[in-house]
Image 1 (cartoon, rainbow, N blue to C red):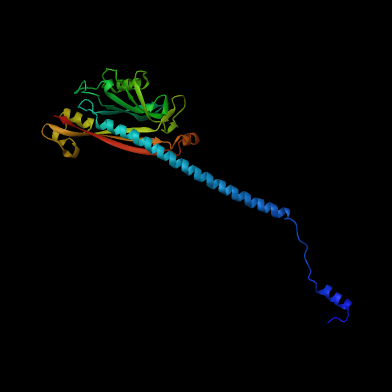
Image 2 (image 1 turned 90 degrees about the vertical axis):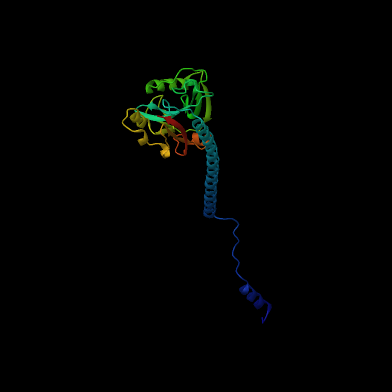
Length: 280
């Protein structure tokens, strides 16, 4: 107990706890650290948002490219399956275009007359043909070309045939239907003729033209020809003409602008077959 009032006052002063001064604001270093953390978080969120956006755009573009490819391949398949063929012309022909020293089998010619063929045992007329190829005016376009008023007969000479088909591609009287505008394009060589669309066709026949020529030359017997599934009789045999197609499409117009080199192209493959009788 205190002896007097002065000693009690002294004891109260001694026992009173020490209070630290209250800080009114953060330091500059703390503020900079906080700003750095917020900046990193915002940057990470921006990267994640862009990745999600690109993924959504690619998925949408891939769906569009798939739809384009399905339509194009279905039209090609339908034309081949309805084609007319004979010993002279096997229903289809694949022609090549040249870019410098390179050749590209990018043109498919199908004999599909709207009515009875004019020359059922000979060569087709140009008006009876359907041509699938890249557009000479824009290699990113796959087109279907017909010439319904051209009554010229398709030549059996490969060079002349190439000239005839190339003429139909650029003729103002030809009908042209665009199947897709998403074909991947690449640069081959230099010059104005260096752009090439990524479209490929391959046609094979069984028996082949060489096999048939050997039979005609009496060097291969009829029964030794490689008939499809060995289906043949005394005077007839079954021939198969098979066409494979490859289309490389870009996943949407936005990706074409952002990826001019076509590094994100999507390949689509298709095939169709035509069967008809060969006669001894």
